Image (cartoon, rainbow, N blue to C red; front, side, top):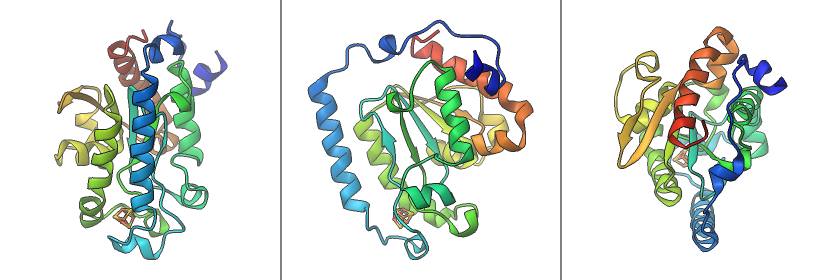
Length: 215
Ligand code: SF4
């Protein structure tokens, strides 16, 4: 209950990780892992946009190559740029709590960002940067082929759904996207500034859990 309480929820879902990952095909997982590894190698020295000049390293993404659930955020921040892993700062710690509240582990899901390189001073991504980097994300999604993508925040939701609608209007409902269900919700960094909205994110997350058979 500590995890759920710290995330601001009281209802504990009855589900298990085993249910979530049952039936995984080991050879398919190996193939996806290889494909993701090849893609990461191809772009780990990417110079396609100006962010290549200021980043420390490309933050490709991490997690289960055969995940049923993928989280897509905005861009690496300071900690991610230093460590080369997505969502490892304060917002990342909150995302981990959300994942654990779903009775999952980070290793069960796949986590990536729209941009693979940190914008200077954590400024918002430019449309040109998102357009340039988007094919890498598309390829990741194509390889993983999750059942659900949880789009974290405005940039992820607008990038995937190709819309200018604000996240406050997009969140909380599924969008079918080439057979994958996309659920936009607030970014964990937003929740750090607006903890009262954790309840809304928990509502969104529970809808994902229902689709994945976790509730
Ligand atoms: S943000 Fe994307 S397109 Fe730009 S340099 Fe990094 S990996 Fe390449």
